[in-house]
Length: 392
Image (cartoon, rainbow, N blue to C red; front, side, top):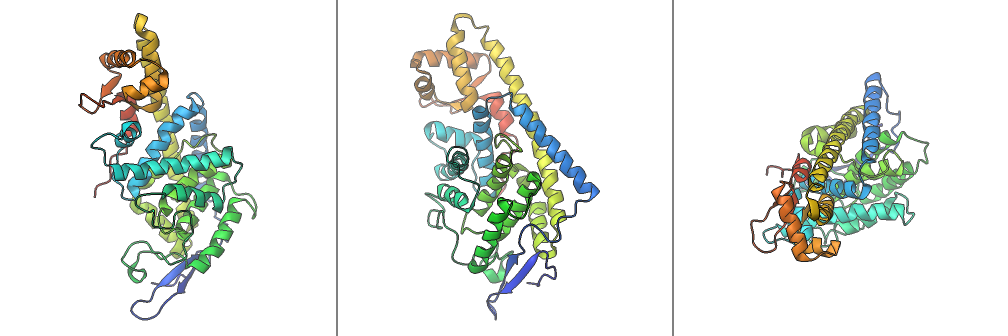
């Protein structure tokens, strides 16, 4: 592996000699030195990204936060886990959460479900526990992410004490080798101080992009670095009050542009090209925020249309609207769960679902006579966009 000539990037540290020898990369501290050069093009990209995020924050106020958060968190969980090789769809996750439906690939879906739990843990600790976005919180989220199944033997909640690598079968033939444990500890200390603005304020959107790239380079866990690193972006935007809720996730953009994503990160390491990374990242922010606005508006439109149609059902309107409202929040719903949550009898819920089916709002998705599940079909179609499993 060639040694970087750019002190702005960091340095390679030779770890062993001979056939098994390799160099590990130690990133330079944040913020970059010299600072990121905000060219006219980067300024334009930053302003467009900030405007798109502002529009997203505004349009999201028209929908109940918990409802929107439920949907976006689950979509993000599927996308982020797909990048790591988990082949699970959004519909499968929603089915699993409702009934652990037969035929659902349980191992994969459990992994996605843990991602949901990790994000929710982070949000709860920040909002109600008063814990800042810190190394401690990232470890807690990591513990939740890897608490069982695949990864449970990979030191959940603990920073690594051994060398890891990305790609290849060993460090000597790896695509990238993060810093060794002793250097990692120093890099993490700088990383946390950067999160807390100890070196002076950094514009929040830019700060989230720099932090993500640095975290990916430090790679402090034995497993789960990518998922925690992607969550970091959304959490930082909430902590720094760019968004009121974490409705924004870059996993779809990273999934669709995987090669460019890895190339941009690698050029930071080999050439100190922070400007190239920031440009790629800002285009992603603007693209994803703009698409999220379109999605949210489309959902609001179908909710309004379908609510009006159900309101014309006459005497059955009350129970049908109650079931529709729950279906909006859950997307996929079992009659048993609906009856329990709404305090209605099973026949009343079943009758309401039949009416929603007749209107083309709900659709039974299992094809079974027992343990049936119903989806808010148009909503699921909108949310499903871009979540098809990656080709193996």
